[in-house]
Length: 309
Image 1: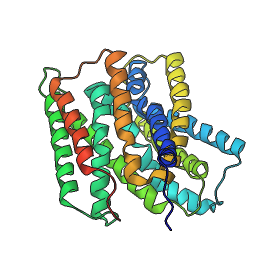
Image 2: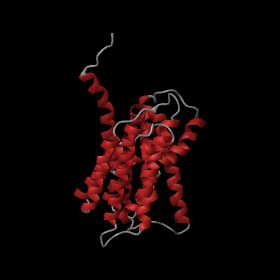
Image 3: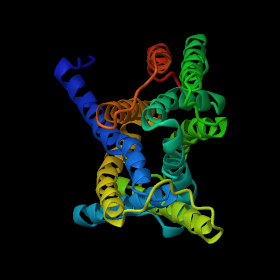
C-alpha cells in the first residue's frame, strides 16, 4: 500500500532549497551595487572581484575546518581540475560585472542576470540533460524578448553606453548559465560542498588577480575613480565575507536543487541588486527596462519546473 505524503512534510522538503535560494541570492546579489561603490572608490574592477573571491574562499576554508568538511574526500588532482573550469564559470564573470557596472549601471547589470535560468534550460536541453518541448521553447523565446527590451531601453536615453559594455554585460549570464550546467554534470561523486567550493573560488581569485596584474603591467588599468584605500579595503572585506556565506548556501543548493532550480538564484540576485541600486544608489530604470524584466519573469512561469531528463 502506498504511503501518503503529508502537506507538512512536503513543505519541509521545500524549506531548505527555498531558504538557501534566498540566502545565496542576497549574499551574491549585493555584488552588483557594491561593485559600483568600489569603482567610485577607485578600486580596479578585476582587483575588486578577485579580492572578494579570495576573501570568500578563506571564509569557506574556515567554515570547512570548523565543520569538519563533510562528504567523501576528493583527490587534490580531481578537485583542482574541476576548480580550474568551475572557477572561471562560477565567479570570474563577476569581474566582467565590475568592469561594466560604471558604464551600464548596477540596476541594469543585475536585471540581466534574470536571463540565467532561461539560458541554463536552453543549454540543458541542447546537451540532452533535459528533453525539449514547445512550452519551454516558447518560454525561452519570451525571455529573449525581455532581454531585447532591457537592452533597447538602455540605449534609448541620452546617456546610452557604448555597445561594447552592453555586450560585456550580456556575456555574464551566458557564462554563469554554463557554470550551472558544468557543476551539475562534473561535480565529483560524494564530494562535500565546502571541499569543492573553496578551490573553485580560489581558482577564480587567481584568474582575476592575475588579469588585474597583467593590466597594471601594461598600463591598461580600468580604475574609474580616485583610489581610496580605506573604503576599498572595507568594501572588499565586507563583500567577501557576505559572498563567502552566500556561496556556502549556493553550493549546497547545487546539491539539493540541481542546475535548473539553482539558476533561479539569478532572480533573487536581480531583485537584490536592482533594489539596492534604485533605493540606495539613486539609479533610475527606464520603463522599458522594467517591462523587459517583467517579460523575463513571465517566461520563467512558462518554462516551469524541470522537464524529464
